[in-house]
Length: 396
Image (cartoon, rainbow, N blue to C red; front, top):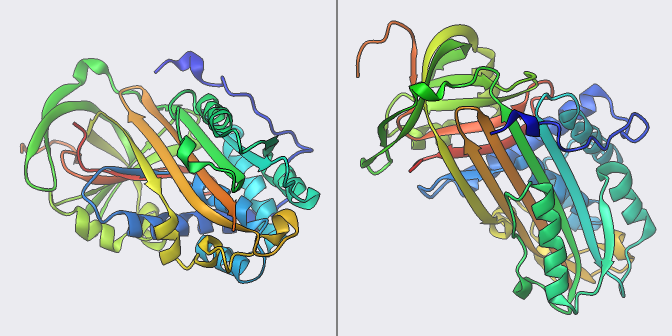
């Protein structure tokens, strides 16, 4: 992971561009994102597979969708997003939070939003303006009759904004003559550890899976002073990235088969409680090197969170998009995320799409040996917003 690449993404925000939001409004938005993070995790975490997603990306895409919703459709989206502000203040807070997260992090952290609307069915200027003013959305008119070209355009856009890590998110068969609008949010993160792992001390060791089997994988090793805590049958370790504005938090159950119990207890409130117990401690850290991606369809999960009408052609009300009630409904909400953790740091990317259609030995120091499944997240420290959340069950 080359250090020269940091700062490669331009900062599109200026003082004039950033929507005004109070510190409390921004914190409210961050709390809502974190609540959505664990709500989604609770619904997505039933399998034994690796999992990784960006609640920040998903929340942004759904917030852009909320901007055009009205009536019960809007109320359900607000509930699913756990919005605690008026719609106008929510959009401003999300825009301001996005600017805060991207500026001065010391890492490459970039978000991008896009709207592709059918040229023959234009969106209201008020809706386009809301997306431009609060989410800096790039808006294009396209001909959805040409599925191949639209698919190529959107996938290229996502590929460019995730530095080639997510080259494909929309399939041609997902687009047809009834498609009216596609909203996309893409997030790219690349950060070097503040304290890098020396590759000379990366050794193969056993990682124990949930089924009791094991695989031999590369483990990174270092001894250093980090924020660390032991509480409630888990060990919590914070690894900062350069610039110290963003960090990775790893939550490791003490028992090798303890992931399920951890997941049942894990909430935004519990995370805050554990975070408050972190203390600077000299720790021996052993962490597997890993890379994986996840591909998620979120309709079923969102329905379980109460977002129902948006997916119903008879009930959906997105009249704030084009002025016509019961003309649009959500056909799909797709999310793809990638993560790589190595000796130098972390690279992560995510994209969310929503489509609308017409109708062993005693250590001399505390030991953090991550040789069994754990939960990890990447968060912005000042606001507390969770940018990425996942679990590792198999690094091989």
